[in-house]
Structure formats: structure tokens, C-alpha cells
Length: 59
Image 1 (spheres, one colour):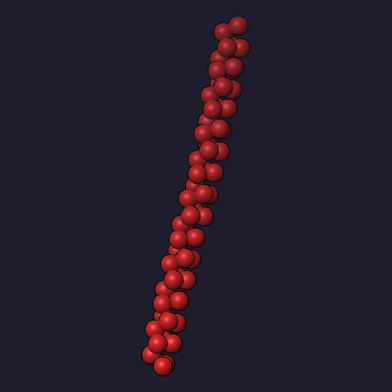
Image 2 (image 1 turned 45 degrees about the vertical axis):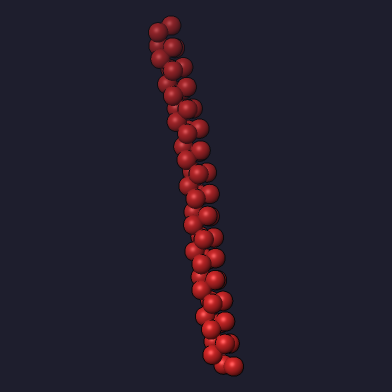
């Protein structure tokens, strides 16, 4: 009986860890996507500003 309880508790703990781990992985992926989008957006805006200056300088 005691051994079975121990095994059940162990399974519960492992299950909880698995859920938390999945949750953390999802958060990390979302965070990475946001960072990549921000960097890409910044690069894009810088590129547009450079092109605007270039066009203004041309005329």
C-alpha cells in the first residue's frame, strides 16, 4: 500500500513537472517569436528611414 502511494505521488509529481515544462517551452517560443518580430520590424523601419533619406537626398 505504502509503495503504491509512493509510486502514485511520483507519477503525479512527474505529470506536474511535464505540464510546467510544456508551459515554459510554449512561453519561451512565444517570447522568441516576439523578439524576432521586434528585431525584424526595427530592421525594416531602419531600412525604410535610410531609403527615405536616400530619396530625399536624391531630389
